[in-house]
Image (tube, rainbow, N blue to C red):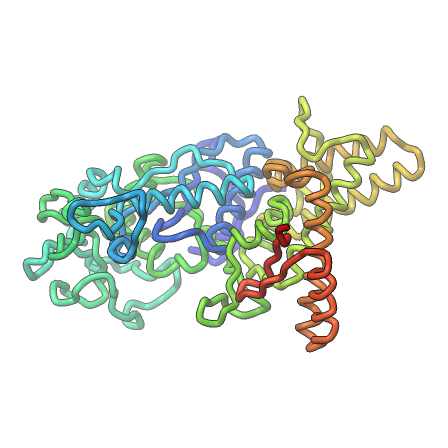
Amino acid sequence: MALRLYDTRTASVRDFEPLIPGRVSLYYCGATVQGRPHVGHVRSAVAFDILTRWLQHRGFDVLSVRNVTDIDDKILEKSLRSFNADFDTSEDPAQEPWFALAYRFEHAFHVAYDALGVQRPRYEPRATGHITEMHALIERLIAAGHAYPALDDSGDVYFDVLSWPHYGELTRQQVDELHAAPDADPRGKRDPRDFALWKGHKPGEPETASWDSPWGRGRPGWHLECSAMATKYLGAQFDIHGGGLDLRFPHHENELAQSAAAGDGFAQFWLHNGMVTFEGEKMSKSLGNTVSPDRMLEIARPVAVRYFLGQAHYRSPLDYKPTSLAEAEAAVERIETFLERAGHSATAEDESEAAVPAAFVAAMDDDLNVPAALAALHETVRSGNTDLDAGRREAAAARAGEVRTMMGVLGLSSVPDGGGGTGSPAAVALGRLVDGLLVHRAEAKAQKDYTAADRIRDQLTEVGVQIEDSPDGARWTLRKG
């Protein structure tokens, strides 16, 4: 069976064949490092990590690129309001330089990715390191009649949307239905829908946040950078471009338009992962229904968090509930318990990978159908336990090898402490017991059984466990002394 993937551009599932046999070129959008990662960022990273691992399992050499947007309007705005004691500038000792803020949050993303076993891409270019490539792309677009310097003296350069008849093809929108692009002052535009390729330096912005260009000092527009970096590392035409569903418009639509208008074949497949919701509702700080990756890693082991983030089909919404991580932990424990019974470690390295069940292969080849793949994994665990109960050790060992290979494909065996928890055995046991009680407490509160919820809280308080309720859920600590 051929590997089939859903292509957003054609709105269809198509057979996937790489441009170069045996090698897959993959670009997926990384972070704009203006703050700490949210759960949507890590869900996307896990989804494309699973894609990469499956392609590698099928024998492909995957050349992967994930960008870092380290210069952006929001980064500059946040640096003006940011204070970090590690930095003290002569101009304003209360202001953290924009590049320092960006680097600080870039590190936070790496910490989150590493904690969840997300493989580092082959290349992870920063926007600020590719200004020359961006200038070259702008010049090509101007020469082709698809871009122009601003009509005022702002130093901006814009993509001429009406000059490109295919604009809107990725998201199947008509130009006449589109609103104005909000990324620059419209006074310098021929049309309000034109978007910025280059942004002229503005009064009040740090001089360090601008570069010389043929159009004056300035900095790149958001959409331009990905087109320039993707083609630098993968060529004018490559296999897959990925990212979150929220990036389809305007970001990916604009990438496609400017790259195609410049004469590049660009991506053959466009893949987009779904959003994360909270009990069926969009996550929002104003609604108090957000949960951060840091909070998830406080509630559950990293391997359970990874399991939860990867368990839904990548194109579907991933719904978080107060019980989600406990359910993921229970699923992981069933796998680990079988491997322990069979004498295998969930994180041990075999000299060679075992074959995986046909059902698992069929599921993963069917547009990365991870829910069906997990069903095949758990069915193999059940079969292995049956073999152990019947004394068929050799058959059970074969099933354990299959389970470990499937865990490797899904990235579950690559999570730090993925097979044995974190901390001492006593600390792990205590954490699981308390988290389990907090799940029951959350369920009681959801059912408005506040007597039961208070009883659980009182029981924990009596044994020295302090509970603090927050918009992200209940937190617990051990009482000192």
